[in-house]
Length: 160
Image (cartoon, rainbow, N blue to C red; front, side, top):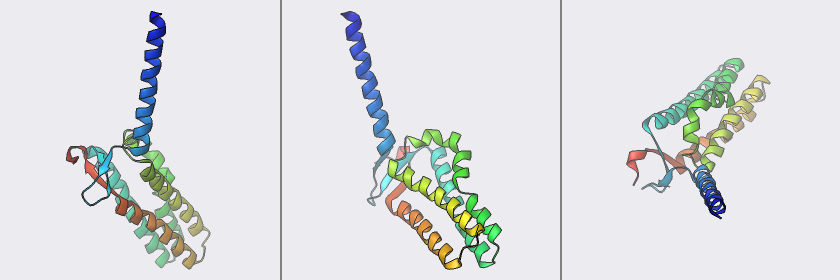
């Protein structure tokens, strides 16, 4: 009788833990900001990592455009690959703590953006027609715009 009750309590606690982790995996550590975007609350170090990654994405776009303008396809492809899924893999150990704090839509947008850089790098190496590459880059930068329109990174202490 006593062990049966402990078993039920243990299962109940396990279910509550799984639901809580699922909630944070899906919604992250977020709130609605004053400008009606989703505020993602991170520690200063986590925030710095995300912002550094975003700056790297912008630098890559600039390198891609510069390389394409100079008809230096290899340089443009290398700029794109520098922030593809290889970057995600290299930051994996640092980002593990952040993943539970990011909402699932932000994660989808981020991973999709990194994959898109790899796709464009392959197309650049094949020397696809420039207008086709520009269309791909337009789609890529729409991800950046969508992210910045929808999300804001705040420090955990700044929760409103």
